Image (cartoon, rainbow, N blue to C red):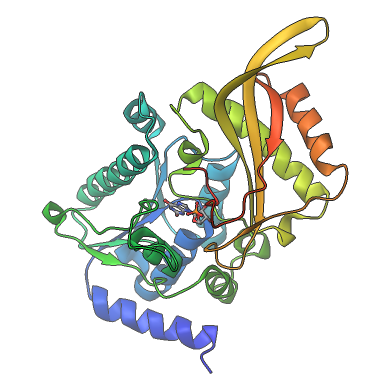
Length: 319
Ligand code: XMP
């Protein structure tokens, strides 16, 4: 049977055959998939590869630093770090429709890759960590009619003007296989075991308009939630856990005062491939404890709810 070592060798040969002497730009999102794709491609073609990490300001707390340090210090793979927070936040100002957010973000990534490609004297290929479920979910929904549920930020091809080809070595793989390949390539368990994080980042976890202030509030609440999940030893049994900042305010009381602040939803699901999912059942006092901590520690949130919806009929992300 097909082992990951064989897959690695076969893909390396395939990448070399596709790329030849060409130059490749690889977009890193901060997640496991693009990191595994980059390490694999680097093994195949070495310094013909330029990795570009676009920090769109929509990352979780500490995430940008982790990626930069993994590539620069652990692998010694050169990395261009683009600080694009202002570009993304300005472009997202006033945008509330989920598909409009996704389309803007996808296009902004492409613009940045194109600009970086010019800086290295032109690139012939753009590499991405697209997985099999990304491809099918952008096209149709399991068992359902052929409609777009969500436009994934890295699916749908490149604008014709770009004259670049895609290199997507993980296109046939499911998440568990990408993790196995990551281990095979020497990524640490802590890195390969990370929960998936969508390319559009926190923008699709803030229904309504995305602002810097909302991102900051969400980052703080999300960090507390994940810290408690790790402390309770539950991180590895959950497929994905995150907070969603709702554009809804509710009345509360704190000390002698009235509060009128935002509502936060917590989500945690179990899944094997992200295509179907069940809400995770936390033990007894876990959720009340997290809710209390978040309301006490995060200014701007005065109520916390838990999302029990499975997929289908819900999706994992809210947008
Ligand atoms: P949904 O919300 O469609 O998510 O149930 C399924 C899985 O895909 C992730 N996701 C994305 N990943 N780009 C990505 O790289 C995207 O645009 C995107 N949208 C959703 C989501 O976090 C979940 O793991």
